[in-house]
Image 1 (tube, rainbow, N blue to C red):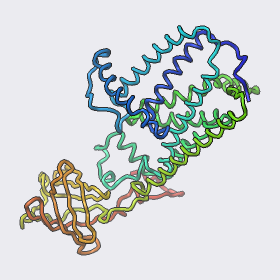
Image 2 (tube, rainbow, N blue to C red; image 1 turned 90 degrees about the horizontal axis):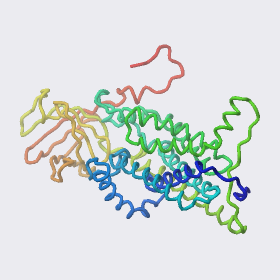
Image 3 (spheres, rainbow, N blue to C red; image 1 turned 135 degrees about the vertical axis):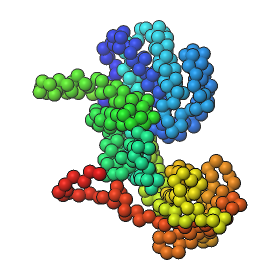
Length: 428
């Protein structure tokens, strides 16, 4: 084990840059936990509530920048709040490093503190990438394109929607991406830290590029992951470049580890480390594999799963013929998930509805997502393998809908499959 004692003094520039980096990275990690350290968000509940007040105040009074202050981090990690928070952290790091430099002028080096900062960054980076990697392996982050997605014209997709469709199509590519990210586990161990940082850098650059070029709102986090990889690799880059450019033998310097004065302290430290790793990784893997049975690819399909084209639409005894501009007559019904369906009307507008299906009673209730009142209440029955009939009420009006189930094998994308031999390109 290496000691941090008797190490050379750092230059003033190196000490100042370390102080800034320490404050910046530590604040970013704890204020953007992102599920890396389990249950930390509960410990930061009250500081987060405080930030939800101070960041809007800082934005209005200091930056003179107004935005919708009711929006906080949600599915998007690139909200105005996130960017103002990032600037706030950056300014705190500058101010804190100045104060620290004045109060701690005589310090020779920060080797011990540098070691613990590297540990924090390594574990945050590893757990973040492993979290994303595990949900890619079981295809939770990029699920297979839903039926509604398969029916969406390409030109109507957002860049992010296109990326999710493209990546979700291939289970194999999901596993490939996920396994590369899971290899960030190598960051958790000193001997494999450098190779783990290189693999993590490759994975993070790929994610960052996707986020930038497909307008995915996780640009701040993915950029931060790339910066953290480079921060870990910084002491080794010159040595690695000399190896590749000069073909001369090179040796990476070992990370200096603080000396434990008593053996029991070392045993306790290592025991805690490995228990923490096993506990965190175990929960991540368990959650990922459990959730795939809840809402992933292995989740059970709803009883009426499928695409249905409307053949007859009889309202109050009158057969409503299909006319392109009709905003009320149904054109197509898609049952994708257990709790909701989508209905496309003749004018090609699509709306999503909450749905409750009672298989035993063969009843279905369809409610607008904007109100709790029942809009449709039907009895349903399959008259044959492909014909489904709804009979019941639309509010107080009688309604009978005859639907023809579309054969999903006619959709090319999920049925094309893999071919070793292609005599001609199949590019449609």
